[in-house]
Image 1 (tube, rainbow, N blue to C red):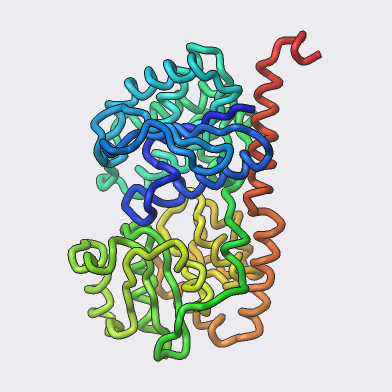
Image 2 (image 1 turned 90 degrees about the horizontal axis):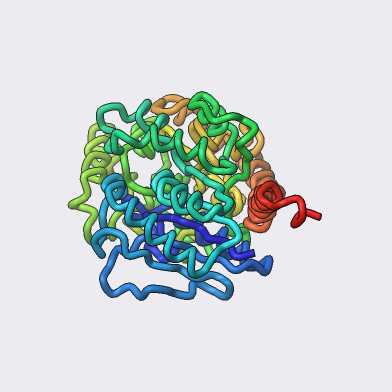
Length: 403
């Protein structure tokens, strides 16, 4: 098949760790590669955000990135991209008329807005993955939600207008059904992890002066919940916390979330046991995870959550909040612990129990690696996505073509 993946703000070529660069970028890049491994030809359409970017870039064999010149050729926060989606859709229509894909799979709601119109014009099968839902964001962030006012209405339109929604977890299915999207139109295929890169074997980052190490990895934004871990550290003696992510190390002092977390650490009396690494090269992530006794993933809400998979693939137990995709990926009492969000006492209790039991941590780590290999490799994810693509293509085919 020729598969068009549309990811308007999350380029598979982006440097990870920025405010708008994270799990979706990884997902689109890895999914494109896994589909190409099956012999499909994949084009990823993403917005051109720099003037020097070429029109097309080969990501790897079988995968091409097409930079769509919609809006200014400069970085624009994703919550301000909606005005450019009409132009994005027109350019997709022109592209697809010249190079018609067999199936379109859009990622994130604005990609769905642009793709829905263009796919309808050409009668192309359209699947959509939201990655995050505006209803959930508004519920948790309230007045701090910077999404456009039109977001939820557009998400409902995309959910009802596409051929199939590919959700990433059961929690998302329930939310979509509450929005009015029929359950029969929704399939579930989780996100994945590179189990050749994230593995128990390999070097670990050097340890620190403390007996135990916790690692919190991800974008440095308040909803990721690092504050709960910093506060919990006051109840965890002999333990250090590495906060990995955010801006480069030389710009940490200017980051508002770093300043906020440092203030919490000072107030809790643990500033000497909290270290911010800043953004790191992707190659440094597996060694950092391997150096941890536990990996902490404590967002207030999480559409899916890649970091628990990365930790479990490295055979490191996870303490995660009982939200979103964590409920599917982290097996409570088997590969880690699930705790309520924004609850430092619960975080501290779960961490303390696991740090006191070396054998239990090892069993959790082994079980986590086995769980990832059974359910979350990119090969298995691509199997699931490819199956949904073929189902939609079959439904679009005429009786003569099916025969």
